[in-house]
Image (cartoon, rainbow, N blue to C red; front, side, top):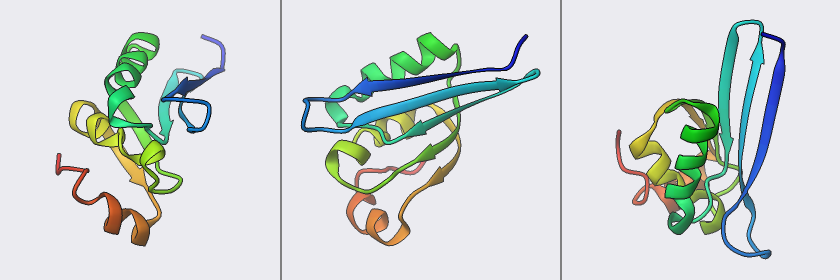
Length: 106
């Protein structure tokens, strides 16, 4: 298969909110899926379905949280609970303080 990438901006609420971003890329036979931010809890199930349906996997190589605002981090609890995740990158001090109660252990 040829090298490719797919970049999706998944709307998470309104025009005032950020997007949940998912990326799948393949180089040769090696592919990876990455997620940047997860939106609100209210849109998390739809974002999870988008990843499963469009990328054909329940595995995310890396989740990146840009900052712990509600429209960026809240929906990641669902993603982390329901999907297999290889690594999480987040602003350590802020995220630990504000999202620790939302992100339950795997």
